[in-house]
Length: 113
Length: 113
Image (cartoon, rainbow over all chains, first blue to last red; front, side):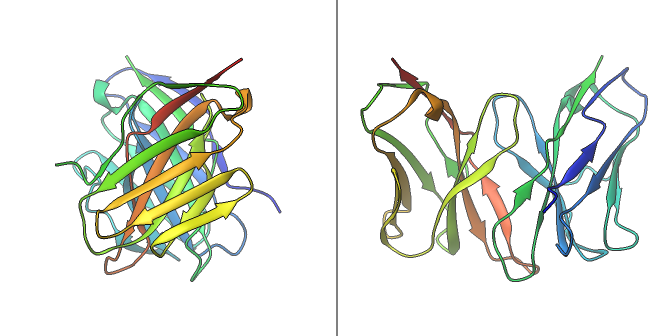
């Protein structure tokens, strides 16, 4: 079974630029999560999708971050414009309905200069 | 008060010793508790979950939960250098959509030869 796929793996941009990350969850996993992990901290949930609907986006900085999951499968997370403090690893995870275990992708490392 | 608190470490133990990792949480309605292991530069991977008070053993790992004290711990017996990693405690709290994980900052474990 293929794991959670993410791209790109690394991204370096300048502040005020925009950036987008892509995630493809494990096949059949209806729930998809985007986390932000700043160096030295635990992952922080940004947004949770159930199929293509948003379940929780309470910690998503909506003035600059957006996410979508149009067909209930893969998802994109966008930052526009980026700030220095957005430098972090962006992790995508997925889980099956009724199963609590979340499986994480390899992450995208973002550096904002 | 942070929702999930862990000592950041590093916790150093000699090879073959027992490593004890601790975590406290603030939300009394927390439902499920998880320990994730994260190697440097890698994504978190689930190693243990526990849902009821008491101990749960899986190989060299034992998770302990005390809901009255809002405390969860992870014991690693016969520690190996390959156990050197950051251990993240995660707590699930019921939300409208369910399955929201809140992570601690992680404890760095170093197993020395």
